[in-house]
Amino acid sequence: MCEFNVILNGKTQIKDIIYAKVEGNNVVVVKNILGQAQEFKGCKIVEVDVNSARLVLASL
Image (cartoon, rainbow, N blue to C red; front, top):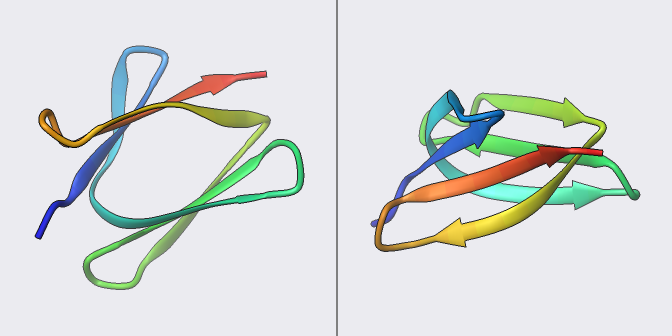
C-alpha cells in the first residue's frame, strides 16, 4: 500500500494519507490510515509523486 505525506509550502503537514479529494475549487480533504480527516482550504493539488510518496499542495 502507498501512503502519502502531504507537503504544503515545503513542509510536511500530515503523514500516512491514503485518500484525497478536491471539494469545490479550493478545498482539499485528505484522510490518513486511521480514517482521520483534515481539510486544506484555499489549496489545490499540484503534484502526486508515487515513487516519493508525496502529495504536494499549493495555496491559491
